[in-house]
Image 1: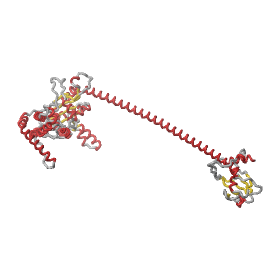
Image 2 (image 1 turned 90 degrees about the horizontal axis):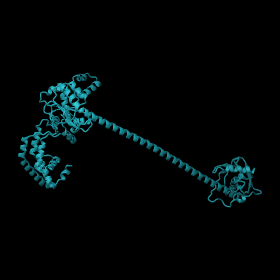
Image 3 (image 1 turned 180 degrees about the horizontal axis):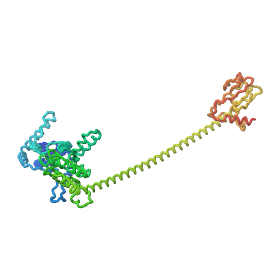
Length: 550
């Protein structure tokens, strides 16, 4: 990202940026580019603006959005007696330092010459690095930057510290000095006493309580107050003041003070100005004497404070206090802070609750709509599934009906062909009865018998054909029998012939004559034994023929 920003500058602008960076010693060019743009790329003007800004204490770890809100934070003392309206408390309080500024002015020509010399060396060394000549990188040399850093280190709270660790350390020191315990730790100790059954925890609980201090940075406490619609109580102390020790013992550990802060659900944040976070908070809140207490809350803008219906808000300092007694602290909360901040917070809470109810109602409506859509979808899917199943059943039924009709047609066609073949066999395969020959009696499955005389030279197949002709209806005259078998029809014998006792099978052999079969000589009774029943009508046809003949 930084490379893109620098790459978008022209040659003169890049040269000006390098000069400023050589003087300030900064690696991040964003601030330098911003100041150069404000100064119309004039190096001297931009450096003066940067050095003037360096006299302030920056806010580490805070978001830009929060800083802008805190910069606008103002003290609303319009309702306090005997006090005039103060100017807005800036988040970046500036401390004038004429001695250092004078030195900067004197050192500026030398720093500028040094930066130009370094710039020339870098331009000359760039092609050498490109062709592979190893050269050491020149460090950022800035006399003014070093002096500025030294000056910052002399300030109170100049040591960088983790805000959460600093807040926790201050609370632990406060507990050691007062012998009381923060409410947050009281709850932890109560849980520990209930679980472990120890008396040590109960003895600790009886020693006194402190407010439930917020563990985090000042900015985080502000954001919590804004987000949760609560009043923030800021407590800043300085060990250099004699009133701090009595304030800790008599006010912060006082039961009435703790109850007042807890009852009204205050967020309490505290610190010592020796810590960087508390020092910066003191600058933003314009603290002058210690111990110092300020109450911060969401308030309507000054132009709309006369209107009770407006919910536009901004974080503002409700009041400041130098509390030297518990009674003054509690009275200030009940008579000043609560009347000024709580009504507007209640309106904000009501509006938030209304929005939450509307949001919940919309969510419930959305869920109901989605549930209705889901049920409708399920009904539609079920109806489509039923339609699909009905269509499948109808298709299956139609397929079965089609197959049934085709099978009936096939069976009917097969039956006609078989009847036609039987009539052809009666005319072409069954010989006329001779005066003398082999007498064969055929007993059909119904028990009835048919007798016929076959020439001794006739084939055994003629006997099988004779059995087939017994199924021809009597109304079909032999004179009408066809002279050729049905085209494409292949006849299959659905029975076998055998003697009764002993049972001897007489196979259908076209090449073998009746007279050559030993069991047929001299006459014989053959039994028709069904082997297959293709059309299921042979027995009925034979029975009908027998009934007609009888």
